[in-house]
Amino acid sequence: MTTEALLVATAVMALVTYLPRVLPLAIFRRKIQNPFLRSFLLYMPYGILAAMIFPAVFFSTNSWISASFGVLISLVLAWFRRGLLTVAIGGTFAVLIAEWILTLI
Image 1: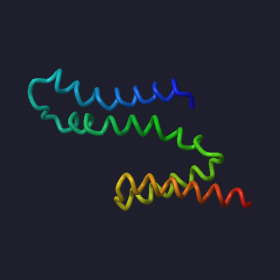
Image 2: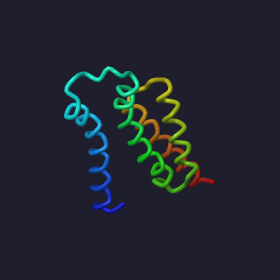
Image 3: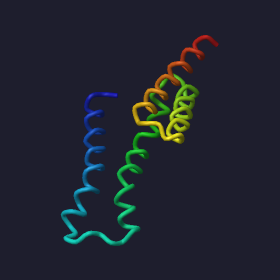
Image 4: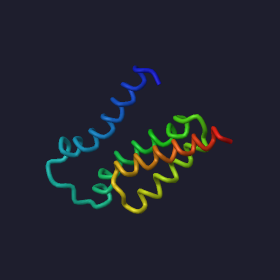
């Protein structure tokens, strides 16, 4: 990934995360009472970031097999409510171990 692409991706992710949080404050003067709209505004940044990041995970390693193994371990750790750092490190080590195994085969 080039530096320009990385900077553009970071700027887009920052914008996507920032706008849904700021726009309701700028547009609405009162507290939003609609539970659907409140839930939508709360989860939209996470959904958009996941949609932007998730496909890139499978192309960031030498093999889709090791990437899938890392995603699987990360999902399992997240399912058991581990912290973000634990999930990231667990997925990284899972990819590392899978890459080592695939080079031995």
